[in-house]
Structure formats: structure tokens, C-alpha cells
Image (cartoon, rainbow, N blue to C red; front, side, top):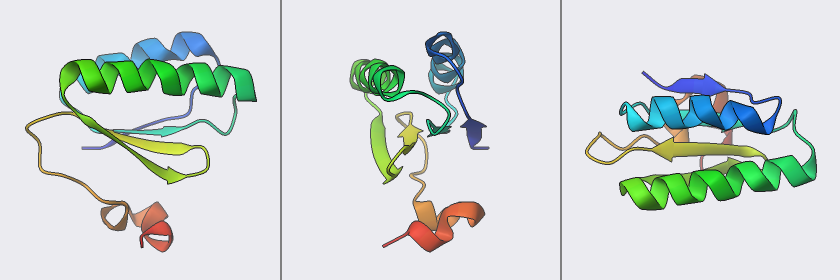
Length: 87
């Protein structure tokens, strides 16, 4: 299961962390955030991913896929709405 989140404020980082720590890949769409808040969210996620040993992939300008460790890796081609973005 890939959890898709569209944060509307920085406090929504709680939900990103919750699902990621529970082993769910998180597709994070930051299009509703201002540039400053989106940058803070990416910084938070980079620390989360680094600290937990996962990976973060940029899918589009403001869309990121966070993958926890020890799960089968997912690519953009596996997400139906984003298949057109796959290389």
C-alpha cells in the first residue's frame, strides 16, 4: 500500500513520519504548500529517510516518494497516476 499525502501545512509532517515509520511508502505531493514550507517539509523528510535508512526519490517538481527500508522498491511506473513521469 502506498500512502498518498497532500500536506497543507508543516504540521502535516506528523502524518508523513507516522506512515513512513510504520513501513508504508509515502507519496508526498507538496503542490499546496508555499515554497518555504515545502522546503522545510523536504528537509524534514530527508532527515527522516536518512535516520531510518530509507530512500527518497523526486518524482516531479513537488512530488516525492519516500521508501522505508526492507520493502520491495517501488518506481514511478508502478503508480498508475504517475506512470507518465517514469523515465
